[in-house]
Amino acid sequence: MTAVPAGSTGPRGLDLERLRGHLDAVRPGLVGGPLSGRLIEGGRSNLTYAVTDGSARWVVRRPPLGHVLATAHDMRREHRVIAALHGTAVPVPGPLLLCEDEEVLGAPFYVMEYVDGVPYRTAGQLEGIGPERTRRAVLALVDTLVDLHAVDPAAVGLGDFGRPEGFLDRQLRRWGKQLAASRGRELAGIDELHAALGRTLPASPAPTVVHGDFRLDNVLIGGPDDTIRAVLDWEMSTLGDPLTDLGLLVMYSSDLGLTDSPVSTTSRAPGHPDPAELVERYAARSGRDTGAIAWYTAFAWFKLAVILEGIHYRFTLGQTVGAGFDRIGELVPVFIEHGLTTLQEG
Image (cartoon, rainbow, N blue to C red; front, side, top):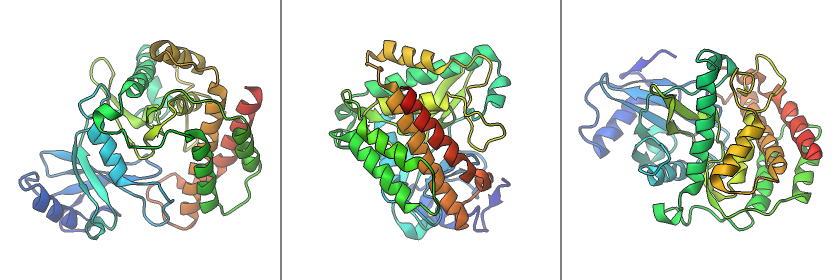
């Protein structure tokens, strides 16, 4: 997307003049010249913008325009967890400020440091770096997840970041409510999947900080050793069952059976470890029992089906920004089917 110079309103959802005024007021001297900004494409939920004054760069995060699901898109929580994890073994961008005054950009937002790196979104992108680097990057993703789950929440000020007791049951109820809030059409099998998950809840291990959307394209990879330089998109983070993160990673490492999809996994890239190896590596490094991983993976399919349906609903209302939203709706039944199959096969 072409950058828009100061003097205009900026990309949709980002008023550069108002942003500059706020930055000058709360962080005088931070900005040294006229601002320009662009929407960072690829996100399907909160909006992310790259902003520069010609020498320094920052990132602005704000909720989507229009229809917003309850409890989602909480800028305060997202900023809080990044600030808490900054300085731990978990790489995150440096937080700069949180603004909850909706008069500035029309919604709460926060600003963080810009981190150089690549979010690998597709198998095609990974093919470009070759099998060896692909394998190293994906295994590093597992190791970073282990590092996240090893953080003591109380030690970093996140002891009250969530309510771990009854976490899985609440998650199922929450995503059921999210589905109801965005339900504009019939979806075969989704109520069956939701009910089956509720009947087979596993016992959770000790709670940790969970990311909530942990996958390869939510991290930035860079440097000569393809290290993970930053974990992004903390909007769903909380305290809870760490195996929900692992189940999601397994889901995103599975083959959707689709080509040319707006939501894709990276599993077909040469060198990509298969889901079983990822689970084994996580279990060995974390010491956690992963025997119920099929349930957690089926729950990930369900959760993503609900998220995609919410995006499809916003698209039907004309409240999405960016490309690729017109095909999101057709993916929802695919995720439902995978969830049912995973749970049935165990």
